[in-house]
Length: 230
Image 1: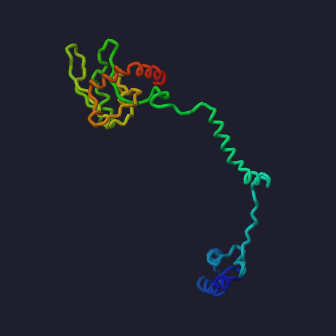
Image 2: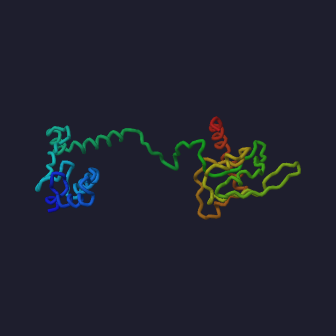
Image 3: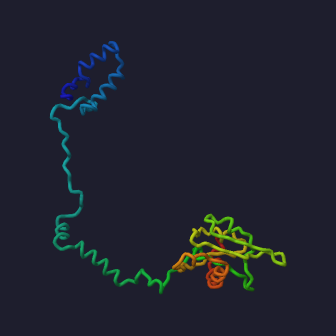
């Protein structure tokens, strides 16, 4: 009923047009008429050419099979299960190739020289500790996981009396290693240091030095490999 009442030559019903003419005068602007006409077109489901006639239907175009397979190919897939045999052929090819997996932990993959694992304190070849107690690592640690206490020696140098790392706080950002001027505190390639208690993850100076002695060869290899990029 609404579309029938609005169906006129201008797209707006005659009573409504007369009201608009009385309110705005005989010279109502064309823009107002166009706006009103577009609003009623949207309500009545019309177009720019006017409201469609009663019973108008939009006929959908016929859909066509866009696949380029012939009927024989489709029948072959359906009756001979060619898709299944094609997948089984892929499995058979992989059977004769070398496996991609390794038998961890008996076999281990390569580790990047920049890998950040368990922490360690290093020594010089003479056995002297590298750490000079500058406390740069403690200051730069964003997790506040490092605690250092130091004292002055007889020769005027400074050495640490306490070097603790709370591994439960560490986020392995590597800032401590980057800030150290003498490469004393490093992160080893070791990832297998899980514990049964939380207290075992509170590393002291003796534990860190023991890690450094154990992984010195791997640490030096990683530093040498990464040196050209630092």
